[in-house]
Structures are given as C-alpha cells and as structure tokens.
Image (cartoon, rainbow, N blue to C red):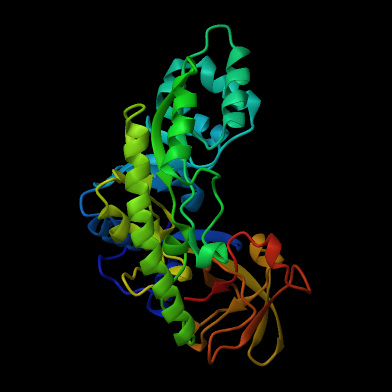
Length: 381
C-alpha cells in the first residue's frame, strides 16, 4: 500500500513521484492502494448513504486488509461476499460476523461446512432465488450429524422492462420479480425447518453500474437518464411491495439494495435498510461517467514497459487480465519511466483510446479478447 498522503490531495500525474518513491524497491507487476484516496472515497460513499449502513462488496475489493480497514470506518457494516468459501474464510478469521454471499451457490462441500459450524451459520447468509437452491442447501446440511440452521437471503429481479417486454435494461439476476413470487418463495423457506429467511437483496445494475454522462455520446446519455428515472420509480414501488409481501410471511433482518452508482437514490427508499457497494472505494474510471458523484483513483497497478515499437506506442509485459485484454489508454502527462507504467483499472474493455492519447499494446496477446477481461482496459493516471 502506498503512503497515506494528505486528505484532499489531487489524484493523477501529480501523485506519480509519490507512487514511484513508495515502490522504488519493487519490480513490476505490482499493485498500489492509495489509502488517502480510499478514505476520501469511503467518506463520500457514506455521505451519499445518508445514515444507512453500507455492506462492503468483497468482490470489488479483493484484499482482506482493505476490507478490515473499511469495516472499521463509520458507515460501513458487514460484507457482501463473492463466494461461500470466501465467506467461510472471512468469518473464520473474524473479519466480520455479518456476511451475505451475493450469489447463489452450488458448492455442496461448502454448504456442509456452513451447517457444521454454528458460529459460521450464525454469521453467514447465502443467496437464493428458487426452490431448487433450497433443495441443494437441505441436502448438503443433511450430510451433517447435527446441522445448524442455514440463513438465506432472497434475491429479486430489478431489471427495467419497457414497451411490453420489448426493452429490458439490467441484469437477469433472479426469476423472482413480483410480490406474489417473492411471498411464495418466502413461504417455501419458512416451511423448511433447517432454513431461516434473514433478508432480501435487490441490485439495480442498470442504475448502479451504468454511467449517465458517457463522454461524446449526448443522445445516448439522454436515453440512459430517461431509462434510469423510469426504472428507479418503478423499482421503488415494486421493491416496497415485495418487502411488504415477504414481511407478512416472516420478519426480515435486512433489505439490501443499490451499488456505488445508485447509493443516494436507493438509500432514499424507506424499504431499504442497507446499501451494497464496494468498487467506489477504488473509484475505477467506470464512475467517471456519472454526474451525481466523483472520487479519487485509489487502486493502481504497475507494469514494465518492455518495447517502444513506434512513436507514441509502448508494449507492457505481464499484468494478468490486462494482458488478456490489452486495450490500454494513456495520457501524455503520465510521465512513464522505462521501468514501470502506473495504470488505473477500468471496468469495460474498449478498443478506443482517450482523445489525444497514443495507443498502448499488451504483450500477452496479439488480439484483444474482451470476454476474458476481468476488469477491462486501463488508463494511466
């Protein structure tokens, strides 16, 4: 991790000397977390949440030390874990006693481990959206001599549907969309002695993960804003109705919603008790295209520049997912040295460099393959 720096210190090329000084003894590839920027981003997220706690998404953070630091920050409570094995690991280390697994699991061995340890079962909630998943959990728990009750969270579909179903925006996360469907699944859970319904989750990807001011695309931006306004209004009504229908079956400990891109809007809903967010702590350039908020790049990585095949073009070695998707963009003010090139993660693969910037090629592949790109292209800061 980098030195903490000073609160309010600008990001970008002005920090290059500080980053290089802190990493002078390291050989690329390596990663850097700017703790001052991280803290500033965390403070901005909690302000936007207006008093509602933020459950930090471990999938976006991928660092236990950072998770621990964020959980020690006022306004953050609990973890939204990536997988059940990860949740078991985090609970076993005492990182948190309130962990929700963000996605359904078919890992029977991990489910058996969960039911085997009462402390883990009390700390971890697994995601469900169908009776088939409930069957898997019950069968895994049945392999344990004296299983502890397993807590589950009901995931609902939040996508926006328009023109009679001809238009759909958002992720197809769940088959559960209506209050009646949610209540029916809640009754199924309540009828199973080994399961406990603890909460409900509704992640609006079409708002939280889609920027409303994409550069150079004014008409598309207008369409996105209109879709997001209509989607937010529809979802607020439907989410409140779903929560009310499920609460008639059993009380809920939490109702999770939102993401970094929709914190303030989701937090304003009375039905929501907490926000799920994580990537805003690092502020990838995905969030450069949002009007409502801004932050400071906090997570960076460095790669060796190994070739300069043409003016304005460099080739970098290694980098894992960057090598699989070598669509990098740079700024002339970046001041790259021959030893390392600090770059900032982006979320989406893009073959177009920023205006006025020369292209950068990755040495790991001659042809970009966006489908294998975990975090997308990168831009130098």
